[in-house]
Image 1 (spheres, one colour):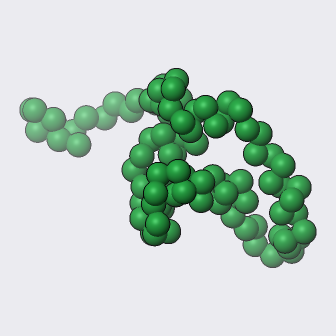
Image 2 (cartoon, helix red, strand yellow):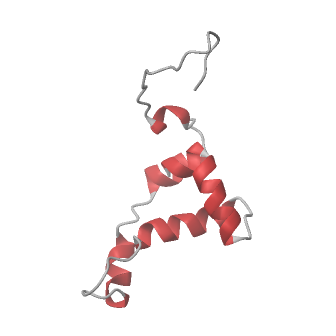
Length: 91
């Protein structure tokens, strides 16, 4: 990144996404009140023990939930929104 003096900034800053999600955000309230681990048990029979690892079923469920809650109809748009929105990414 080029700064005012046209010098490259070489500092890295580590951030915690938790700090960027307000206490009253709906996704934070959901995370505090729902344990999504039950999904692993429900979906276990649908995932193969052989071959390449599949996507995390909890991640897929949470993405679909975000799409439903925030009226995102397109899976491509949902994927892009999850990349851009810090609260979605935190969730």
